[in-house]
Image (tube, rainbow, N blue to C red):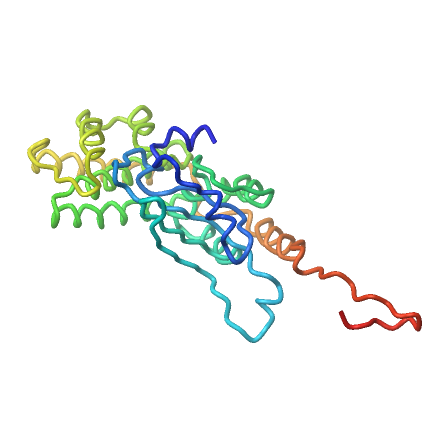
Length: 276
Protein backbone atom coordinates (compact mmCIF):
# COMPACT_ATOMS: atom_id res chain seq x y z
CA UNK A 1 0.00 0.00 0.00
CA UNK A 2 3.03 2.32 0.06
CA UNK A 3 2.53 3.39 -3.55
CA UNK A 4 -1.12 4.17 -2.86
CA UNK A 5 -0.21 6.24 0.17
CA UNK A 6 2.10 8.42 -1.90
CA UNK A 7 -0.20 8.87 -4.89
CA UNK A 8 -2.09 11.89 -3.60
CA UNK A 9 -5.39 10.06 -3.14
CA UNK A 10 -8.04 11.78 -1.01
CA UNK A 11 -7.70 10.97 2.67
CA UNK A 12 -10.28 8.71 4.26
CA UNK A 13 -11.60 7.04 1.10
CA UNK A 14 -12.06 3.30 1.67
CA UNK A 15 -11.17 1.71 -1.66
CA UNK A 16 -11.27 -1.80 -0.18
CA UNK A 17 -14.98 -1.34 0.45
CA UNK A 18 -15.51 -0.66 -3.24
CA UNK A 19 -13.94 -4.03 -4.08
CA UNK A 20 -16.11 -5.84 -1.54
CA UNK A 21 -19.30 -4.35 -2.99
CA UNK A 22 -18.85 -5.77 -6.51
CA UNK A 23 -21.34 -8.43 -7.70
CA UNK A 24 -18.57 -10.72 -9.00
CA UNK A 25 -15.11 -11.30 -7.54
CA UNK A 26 -12.39 -9.02 -8.84
CA UNK A 27 -9.15 -10.41 -10.22
CA UNK A 28 -7.58 -7.03 -9.55
CA UNK A 29 -8.40 -3.38 -9.07
CA UNK A 30 -5.92 -0.54 -9.53
CA UNK A 31 -5.98 3.24 -9.58
CA UNK A 32 -5.61 4.82 -13.02
CA UNK A 33 -6.02 8.33 -14.40
CA UNK A 34 -4.25 11.41 -13.07
CA UNK A 35 -3.12 9.67 -9.88
CA UNK A 36 -1.34 6.99 -11.90
CA UNK A 37 0.04 9.55 -14.32
CA UNK A 38 1.57 11.58 -11.49
CA UNK A 39 -0.33 14.84 -11.82
CA UNK A 40 -3.48 14.67 -9.67
CA UNK A 41 -5.25 17.83 -8.58
CA UNK A 42 -6.72 18.50 -5.19
CA UNK A 43 -10.16 17.91 -6.72
CA UNK A 44 -9.29 15.00 -9.03
CA UNK A 45 -11.74 12.13 -9.09
CA UNK A 46 -10.53 8.61 -8.35
CA UNK A 47 -10.44 6.32 -11.39
CA UNK A 48 -10.52 2.62 -10.51
CA UNK A 49 -9.95 0.01 -13.20
CA UNK A 50 -9.88 -3.76 -13.01
CA UNK A 51 -11.10 -7.19 -14.01
CA UNK A 52 -14.11 -9.11 -12.76
CA UNK A 53 -14.69 -12.85 -13.11
CA UNK A 54 -18.07 -13.91 -14.43
CA UNK A 55 -19.30 -17.26 -13.19
CA UNK A 56 -19.53 -20.27 -15.48
CA UNK A 57 -23.28 -20.35 -14.87
CA UNK A 58 -23.64 -16.75 -16.04
CA UNK A 59 -21.73 -17.52 -19.24
CA UNK A 60 -23.53 -20.74 -20.19
CA UNK A 61 -27.03 -19.62 -19.22
CA UNK A 62 -29.56 -17.76 -21.34
CA UNK A 63 -28.68 -14.33 -20.04
CA UNK A 64 -26.19 -11.84 -21.47
CA UNK A 65 -23.87 -10.94 -18.60
CA UNK A 66 -22.03 -7.64 -18.75
CA UNK A 67 -18.55 -8.06 -20.17
CA UNK A 68 -17.80 -4.48 -19.11
CA UNK A 69 -19.21 -2.76 -16.06
CA UNK A 70 -19.10 0.97 -15.41
CA UNK A 71 -20.18 2.81 -12.28
CA UNK A 72 -19.81 6.39 -11.06
CA UNK A 73 -20.66 7.71 -7.62
CA UNK A 74 -19.68 10.12 -4.84
CA UNK A 75 -18.33 8.87 -1.54
CA UNK A 76 -16.97 10.92 1.33
CA UNK A 77 -17.11 13.98 -0.92
CA UNK A 78 -15.00 12.35 -3.64
CA UNK A 79 -16.14 11.54 -7.16
CA UNK A 80 -15.19 7.98 -8.07
CA UNK A 81 -15.65 5.74 -11.07
CA UNK A 82 -15.00 2.05 -11.60
CA UNK A 83 -14.66 0.25 -14.92
CA UNK A 84 -14.04 -3.50 -15.02
CA UNK A 85 -13.91 -6.04 -17.84
CA UNK A 86 -14.55 -9.74 -17.53
CA UNK A 87 -11.27 -11.66 -17.56
CA UNK A 88 -11.79 -13.04 -21.07
CA UNK A 89 -12.50 -9.62 -22.58
CA UNK A 90 -9.56 -8.06 -20.74
CA UNK A 91 -7.16 -10.67 -22.09
CA UNK A 92 -8.53 -10.14 -25.60
CA UNK A 93 -7.75 -6.44 -25.20
CA UNK A 94 -4.25 -7.29 -23.95
CA UNK A 95 -3.60 -9.14 -27.19
CA UNK A 96 -4.45 -6.04 -29.21
CA UNK A 97 -2.43 -2.83 -29.29
CA UNK A 98 -4.27 -1.46 -26.26
CA UNK A 99 -2.05 0.55 -23.95
CA UNK A 100 -4.89 1.40 -21.57
CA UNK A 101 -5.36 -2.13 -20.26
CA UNK A 102 -1.62 -2.68 -19.90
CA UNK A 103 -1.30 0.50 -17.82
CA UNK A 104 -4.18 -0.66 -15.65
CA UNK A 105 -2.72 -4.13 -15.23
CA UNK A 106 0.78 -2.86 -14.44
CA UNK A 107 -0.29 0.09 -12.28
CA UNK A 108 1.68 0.17 -9.01
CA UNK A 109 -1.39 1.66 -7.30
CA UNK A 110 -2.92 -1.69 -6.39
CA UNK A 111 -6.19 -1.73 -4.46
CA UNK A 112 -6.84 -5.47 -4.82
CA UNK A 113 -4.78 -8.32 -6.25
CA UNK A 114 -4.90 -12.09 -6.65
CA UNK A 115 -2.78 -14.95 -8.03
CA UNK A 116 -4.48 -14.51 -11.41
CA UNK A 117 -3.46 -10.84 -11.39
CA UNK A 118 0.13 -11.85 -10.70
CA UNK A 119 0.01 -14.33 -13.58
CA UNK A 120 -1.34 -11.66 -15.94
CA UNK A 121 1.48 -9.31 -14.96
CA UNK A 122 4.01 -12.05 -15.63
CA UNK A 123 2.58 -12.64 -19.10
CA UNK A 124 2.23 -8.95 -20.00
CA UNK A 125 5.75 -8.62 -21.38
CA UNK A 126 4.89 -11.05 -24.16
CA UNK A 127 2.05 -8.94 -25.54
CA UNK A 128 4.15 -5.79 -26.06
CA UNK A 129 4.69 -5.00 -29.74
CA UNK A 130 5.94 -2.13 -31.86
CA UNK A 131 2.32 -1.43 -32.80
CA UNK A 132 1.59 -0.11 -29.32
CA UNK A 133 3.28 3.02 -30.60
CA UNK A 134 0.16 3.68 -32.69
CA UNK A 135 -1.96 3.64 -29.54
CA UNK A 136 0.10 6.31 -27.82
CA UNK A 137 0.39 8.46 -30.93
CA UNK A 138 -3.38 8.39 -31.41
CA UNK A 139 -4.14 9.11 -27.77
CA UNK A 140 -1.73 12.05 -27.74
CA UNK A 141 -3.30 13.50 -30.89
CA UNK A 142 -6.78 13.29 -29.36
CA UNK A 143 -5.64 15.03 -26.18
CA UNK A 144 -3.81 17.69 -28.16
CA UNK A 145 -6.99 18.53 -30.07
CA UNK A 146 -8.85 18.74 -26.76
CA UNK A 147 -6.22 21.12 -25.39
CA UNK A 148 -6.50 23.27 -28.52
CA UNK A 149 -10.24 23.63 -27.82
CA UNK A 150 -10.14 24.12 -24.05
CA UNK A 151 -6.71 25.49 -23.15
CA UNK A 152 -6.73 23.29 -20.04
CA UNK A 153 -3.60 21.83 -18.49
CA UNK A 154 -5.10 18.36 -18.10
CA UNK A 155 -5.29 17.35 -21.79
CA UNK A 156 -1.95 19.04 -22.43
CA UNK A 157 -0.25 16.93 -19.77
CA UNK A 158 -2.07 13.85 -21.05
CA UNK A 159 -0.65 14.50 -24.52
CA UNK A 160 2.92 14.86 -23.27
CA UNK A 161 2.52 11.85 -20.99
CA UNK A 162 1.22 9.63 -23.79
CA UNK A 163 4.06 10.55 -26.14
CA UNK A 164 6.72 10.00 -23.49
CA UNK A 165 5.16 6.68 -22.46
CA UNK A 166 5.19 5.59 -26.09
CA UNK A 167 8.79 6.66 -26.63
CA UNK A 168 9.93 4.87 -23.47
CA UNK A 169 8.01 1.72 -24.37
CA UNK A 170 9.53 1.60 -27.84
CA UNK A 171 13.02 2.33 -26.53
CA UNK A 172 13.14 0.37 -23.26
CA UNK A 173 10.31 -2.16 -23.62
CA UNK A 174 8.63 -1.00 -20.39
CA UNK A 175 5.19 0.51 -19.80
CA UNK A 176 5.71 3.58 -17.60
CA UNK A 177 2.65 5.80 -17.19
CA UNK A 178 3.98 8.08 -14.41
CA UNK A 179 4.99 11.40 -15.95
CA UNK A 180 7.46 12.52 -13.22
CA UNK A 181 9.27 9.18 -13.62
CA UNK A 182 9.33 9.63 -17.39
CA UNK A 183 10.89 13.08 -16.98
CA UNK A 184 13.85 11.38 -15.30
CA UNK A 185 14.04 8.61 -17.91
CA UNK A 186 13.56 10.51 -21.18
CA UNK A 187 14.59 13.94 -22.49
CA UNK A 188 11.62 16.28 -22.09
CA UNK A 189 10.85 20.01 -21.84
CA UNK A 190 11.92 21.43 -18.48
CA UNK A 191 8.65 23.35 -18.08
CA UNK A 192 6.63 20.13 -17.68
CA UNK A 193 7.48 20.02 -13.97
CA UNK A 194 5.98 23.51 -13.61
CA UNK A 195 2.84 22.45 -15.48
CA UNK A 196 2.44 19.46 -13.14
CA UNK A 197 2.74 21.77 -10.13
CA UNK A 198 0.22 24.21 -11.62
CA UNK A 199 -2.36 21.48 -12.21
CA UNK A 200 -2.39 20.50 -8.54
CA UNK A 201 -4.56 23.50 -7.74
CA UNK A 202 -7.48 22.61 -10.05
CA UNK A 203 -8.46 19.61 -12.16
CA UNK A 204 -9.60 21.84 -15.03
CA UNK A 205 -7.13 24.69 -14.57
CA UNK A 206 -6.08 26.66 -17.62
CA UNK A 207 -2.59 26.92 -19.07
CA UNK A 208 -2.68 30.69 -18.92
CA UNK A 209 0.63 32.27 -19.83
CA UNK A 210 2.84 29.54 -18.33
CA UNK A 211 4.18 28.49 -21.75
CA UNK A 212 3.61 29.92 -25.20
CA UNK A 213 1.42 27.99 -27.60
CA UNK A 214 4.10 28.10 -30.27
CA UNK A 215 6.62 26.49 -27.90
CA UNK A 216 4.13 23.79 -26.95
CA UNK A 217 3.33 23.02 -30.56
CA UNK A 218 6.99 22.74 -31.45
CA UNK A 219 7.76 20.45 -28.51
CA UNK A 220 4.75 18.21 -29.09
CA UNK A 221 5.67 17.87 -32.76
CA UNK A 222 9.25 17.00 -31.78
CA UNK A 223 8.08 14.33 -29.33
CA UNK A 224 5.73 12.84 -31.92
CA UNK A 225 8.66 12.63 -34.34
CA UNK A 226 10.74 10.95 -31.63
CA UNK A 227 7.99 8.39 -31.15
CA UNK A 228 7.94 7.74 -34.90
CA UNK A 229 11.68 7.14 -34.89
CA UNK A 230 11.59 5.04 -31.72
CA UNK A 231 8.87 2.86 -33.21
CA UNK A 232 10.94 2.40 -36.34
CA UNK A 233 14.05 1.46 -34.33
CA UNK A 234 12.42 -0.62 -31.57
CA UNK A 235 13.32 -4.22 -30.90
CA UNK A 236 9.76 -5.01 -29.90
CA UNK A 237 8.18 -7.69 -32.10
CA UNK A 238 5.51 -7.30 -34.75
CA UNK A 239 3.10 -9.73 -33.08
CA UNK A 240 2.28 -10.55 -29.45
CA UNK A 241 3.23 -13.89 -27.94
CA UNK A 242 1.83 -15.88 -25.06
CA UNK A 243 -1.73 -16.20 -26.35
CA UNK A 244 -1.81 -19.91 -25.49
CA UNK A 245 -0.64 -19.25 -21.93
CA UNK A 246 -3.20 -16.47 -21.56
CA UNK A 247 -5.93 -18.76 -22.88
CA UNK A 248 -4.93 -21.42 -20.36
CA UNK A 249 -5.04 -18.82 -17.59
CA UNK A 250 -8.55 -17.69 -18.52
CA UNK A 251 -9.83 -21.28 -18.59
CA UNK A 252 -8.14 -22.34 -15.36
CA UNK A 253 -9.28 -19.22 -13.51
CA UNK A 254 -12.87 -19.76 -14.60
CA UNK A 255 -12.94 -23.45 -13.71
CA UNK A 256 -11.26 -22.86 -10.35
CA UNK A 257 -13.95 -20.36 -9.34
CA UNK A 258 -15.62 -21.79 -6.18
CA UNK A 259 -19.02 -20.86 -7.63
CA UNK A 260 -18.40 -23.52 -10.29
CA UNK A 261 -18.23 -26.21 -7.60
CA UNK A 262 -21.40 -26.01 -5.48
CA UNK A 263 -21.65 -28.29 -2.46
CA UNK A 264 -22.91 -31.75 -3.30
CA UNK A 265 -26.51 -32.51 -2.47
CA UNK A 266 -26.97 -34.78 0.55
CA UNK A 267 -27.27 -38.50 -0.15
CA UNK A 268 -30.31 -40.42 1.12
CA UNK A 269 -30.09 -43.89 2.68
CA UNK A 270 -31.07 -45.38 -0.68
CA UNK A 271 -28.05 -43.74 -2.29
CA UNK A 272 -30.07 -41.14 -4.20
CA UNK A 273 -29.21 -37.46 -4.18
CA UNK A 274 -31.73 -35.39 -2.34
CA UNK A 275 -32.57 -31.88 -3.42
CA UNK A 276 -31.10 -29.24 -1.16
